[in-house]
Length: 142
Image 1 (tube, rainbow, N blue to C red):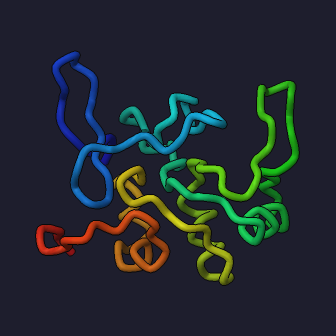
Image 2 (image 1 turned 90 degrees about the horizontal axis):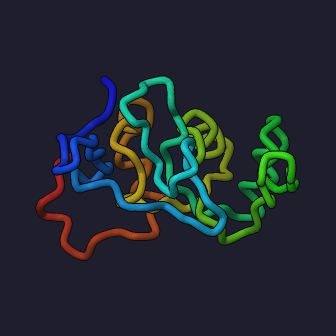
């Protein structure tokens, strides 16, 4: 599928979020995103799956460590200070979905979660964990 969205004024692809709008930044402290640009974008590469903007919790971090994805331990050699509960982070869709199935899903910022996630995770599931639900849902497609 590649990037979901159109081409902006600069020629860059404008990726879409799961609500159909422009993809919003996820977080910059710490700097997140596969491309370390603060966004859960794919830059048109369907292999990039760091597309769920999660607000990590202690439970989610423990779950990720239990499946071999230690997000809490600092890795200074990669410029990674380790995550703490409350940090926003672009996590992989498969790992977030596994946490959901295991009862440890982190809250999700829908406006900063890439629409490509919908190939794997239904919008209804993401909405169950949303922390940025719009007050008017009438314009959203299911």
